[in-house]
Amino acid sequence: MEWISLVAALLLHGGAILPAGQAGSAVLHDDAAAREAFRSAYTVLMHPRCMNCHPAGDAPLQGDDSHVHLQNVKRGTTGHGKYGMKCNTCHQDTNLAGANMPPGVHDWHMPLPTMRLVFEGKSAGELCRQMKDPSRNGGKSLRGVIDHLETPLVKWGWTPGDGRTTPPMTYSEFVQKMREWVDKGGACPE
Image 1: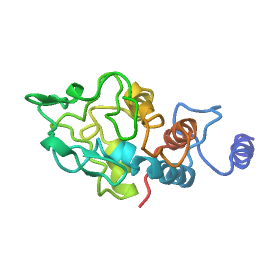
Image 2: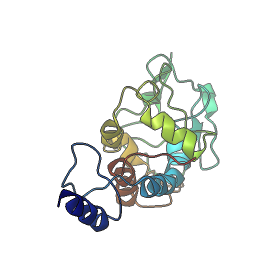
Image 3: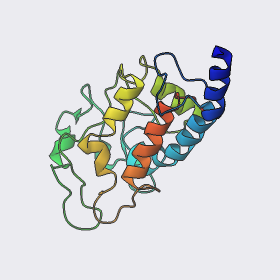
């Protein structure tokens, strides 16, 4: 009789087996759906609003063309710039009015130099694996990665100020795709 219940549960949940501890959960472990959700979210992660602060080098990028930041700005030991070129010298708590004026949000910064979190040049699979790896993502669990999306700095990407484009999906759609990726098991594209 137990095997009949197991078969019925598998049919009800599309053949997916729930991860341990999630019996009865409405969310299913589904590698294909997780990969597809990440691929969708990846279009945002590769947009200049994300990638400009997650470059391969120590200089942030800027503009919709992701050129190296003018004024020779560098990351610095805390991610807040070096010497007299601290991020908050130009980047205030809000965007400055006018096309291409310095954008702003409280605590404008880049990732620490010890945990660069590079997006630039990464394939969807490479970036996904980096985001899942606590040794390369700032010690975050997958839920911690989602929590980071709630920060004002990330949300700023959808209100970037005059003269800047916004990511290819709404903020709520992006967060939904990232949550779906995590909830479905966090599988990465190849």
